[in-house]
Length: 543
Ligand code: FAD
Image 1: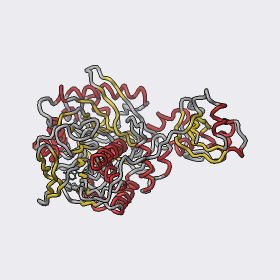
Image 2 (image 1 turned 45 degrees about the vertical axis):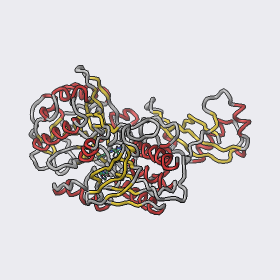
Image 3 (image 1 turned 30 degrees about the vertical axis):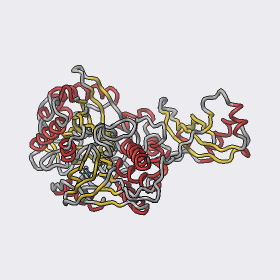
Image 4 (image 1 turned 90 degrees about the horizontal axis):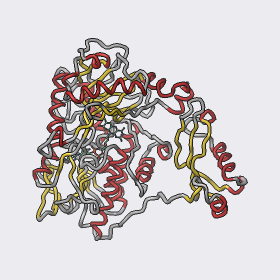
């Protein structure tokens, strides 16, 4: 198989997401200078977009190609960096279980990290037991809507907790900047497609799935794990970890039941604050890590589309490239970095607290991304050394303090405190919405956000928003809306593990995994970490 990169075709000739096979085939034959009869088959490995010239936008393909005489072509193009043998991106298991199934690994948490840890362990024959504090996804959906519609929070079943983990009600963006030399990301995407994700996620450069499909996929993956001999127990919160001689012996559930294991994957996500406390109290090594705090910002999606697509803006471009997104960074004069986080084109801002009497924002969208507003977190980086020194869990307390304050600022009824961008920049309270109606439910209470975050964060954001408007025209739209607070951007702690065995540095048999452990950020990277940890567990179980 050959990998041919950078085959470029004008977007106006494409259907929607890609060109027709005949068009790609013609370009390929031209590029390889071969007759059609020598081409056996091809598939799209990646499809990017080259929008540097707004009047001539291109789809850029990397293609995997089978030809009759591969050696001849490689010899002819030996100096051409765009025609090479295709690398092997298939997944290879590091170990398989023997017949002896007495030592079952336990996976705590069924978010992307736990799902992939359990899936790989199940596929390798290790019959994992999964313990998830929340409910199965359909019941969980009902509880999540309970907060959004009726202001009723279930602390065990919400946006953060339950089958599928934190990203189930999300935009389902599936890209990441992690280094991935072993192509684990490909394995994740292939499993998602098997579970019902659209095929295009395998090749488009910035894939997303949207909430509705994620729910079905999560159920499908659960069924696969069970069919392979895994066991998944919902409403099973782990409240304790038994450790003897620095070796994990098992876990206790909130019901009091004890489940013995010497191989425990802890994939509890960034919001499992009670679990972090328990882990710390058991003497497992935990350290504070940096994260970010800020607000959600909402603009009309049409403003973002026009700003991003510029002269090429048209219905056809919108149909092919979809609602536009942005990624922005500003280094403020006070030394803080402000950046856009988890941008959701055509989406909604969601209430994302898992604790009573607190307010947290985040964003989600459906696959179609066709809601009226674009939203993103606008967040400021903070570090333990400067902002919450002294204790490994001080970042959790810092988050809690901001979230409680936001609850009060919002009117103490789960409405989020909000302010128009113009008023925020001028530091005056907002009293009336303008052309942008916020999407956050159960509601937004207009106020002054000046006290919602520390002064350094507010002043950095006041500087950043006009700077962002130089890159995305209209970003400082006076009627745009800010809602707060965005605090769950990543884990405030790291449960430190060794680089080789991926076990806790002072507790054998404990495999910290995914975002909560401080080793991932986002659905794809958490899933990839789940695979890495499953491999480490497999090796440990068979050594
Ligand atoms: P989680 O997904 O948080 O899963 C942890 C699981 O552990 C939870 O289900 C929890 O109930 C369970 N658990 C916790 N404590 C215990 C315990 N003691 N016992 C048993 N079970 C326990 N990322 C993207 O890449 N793209 C996006 O578009 C995106 N949008 C997002 C939108 C929202 C609204 C939110 C909240 C997050 C979004 N994210 C997105 C972030 C993404 O969801 C997380 O990075 C990812 O889910 C982390 O995966 P994880 O498996 O490490 O942890």
